[in-house]
Image (cartoon, rainbow, N blue to C red; front, side, top):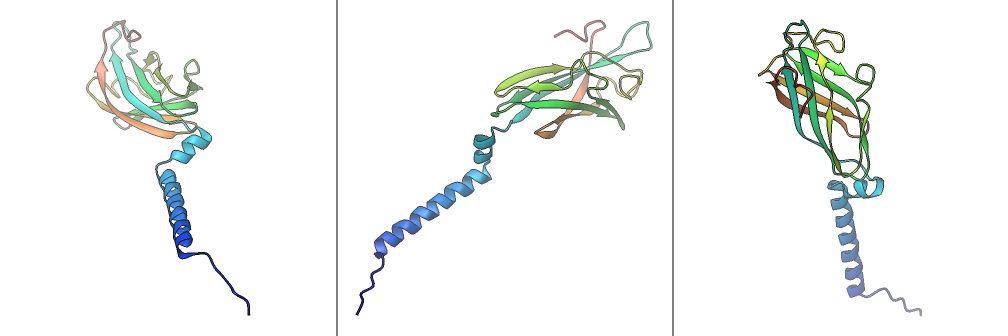
Length: 170
């Protein structure tokens, strides 16, 4: 007759508890995105502020706007801003490398905060589809930022009024 012996109930309980703890840690890491940021170093993009200034240019028919975006990347890798849309009153201004090549694409390095400025965008329908009267000071608008890795981030803001000749300062 052969004697068969298994593991003791105490050891079996310890193994089951250890496996349950390991599974719990894995699930928590997956739910909170810890493993993705450690393994791939993904970007964590946040827009802390978006300011759009409307400026009336005296003695011309071309008023202008300027957008300043305060972007923080607290993640482990860089991301690239490839497109900006400014929408208000059922009109949208699309800015990308075709009409804003001196600014876009714009790379935001890991663990940095950047200020991205579009510079003066003349509202004559050439640079973008907005023209004078489409948006103005006090209007609620939506600024959408398109990133290569982080996708689309929408930031609602109100257009402020600038002082003639100072749209590109501070």
